[in-house]
Image (tube, rainbow, N blue to C red):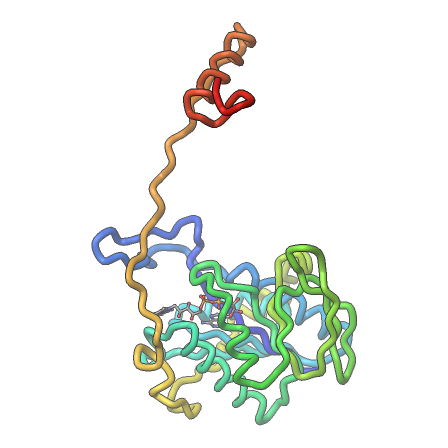
Length: 273
Ligand SMILES: Cc1cc2nc3c(=O)[nH]c(=O)nc-3n(C[C@H](O)[C@H](O)[C@H](O)COP(=O)(O)OP(=O)(O)OC[C@H]3O[C@@H](n4cnc5c(N)ncnc54)[C@H](O)[C@@H]3O)c2cc1C
């Protein structure tokens, strides 16, 4: 069985800063990581490969530095890595990104038919959760989103549990299909030493507009109807007021109650104090 994982390299969100003048993300010097949801998608693909046999191919669209994320992914046990990289892809929004990734998957599918595509639920920098469903729609694959458990996989179909606000839903789909996954799906393994050594010198295949046919009107800024009007960091919250109750607990409690009345957070029955 052939599993394709869409994996995105993202800035470590705890360290992202925003340029106050241009309102753009300052990526320089910010460490990059594999999008956490995609790490779980990769882990599941490797587990399924170990169970039913087959191959795991990773696909990413990003700058040349995304090779680092692909090597890391290879160290977990993937078999092939493809990097879609080139200036022609710059400025692509989620619609264009889904188009570009779909074209790459279709190309891979020509020589090695794809049975299951796995994506993260969302990327922690873009947060749109649109890319996976966008790819499934273009490929004409059933999409199983918010997956928290793969119950069964056989030659023709896959059965999963989907996370809902009110519980979980058990869904079966015919293959080929696409999953978008939650972090609860699995525990990520440690990379084995032989795989780490093999991955260190691995060179991902580079794909650009010369190697795959892309419609220029569907990618880059031209193919991206979304525009970002403003991006900003929320103001830092000042710490809450503290009341020391160590010496006089009942006095401190009275102080807190008084404050809550003042702020109209609590009221006496009837709406007054
Ligand atoms: C107007 C505009 C211009 C932009 N220009 C750029 C730009 O120049 N450079 C840039 O890097 N970003 C750019 N972006 C951001 C980029 O469009 C998004 O990061 C991308 O579309 C994915 O959307 P997301 O991050 O919300 O991913 P989501 O849809 O939340 O991601 C869901 C899943 O899709 C898969 N996925 C998403 N993106 C990729 C990818 N690149 N490769 C492989 N798998 C992926 C992963 O499995 C991920 O977990 C731009 C966005 C806009 C709106």
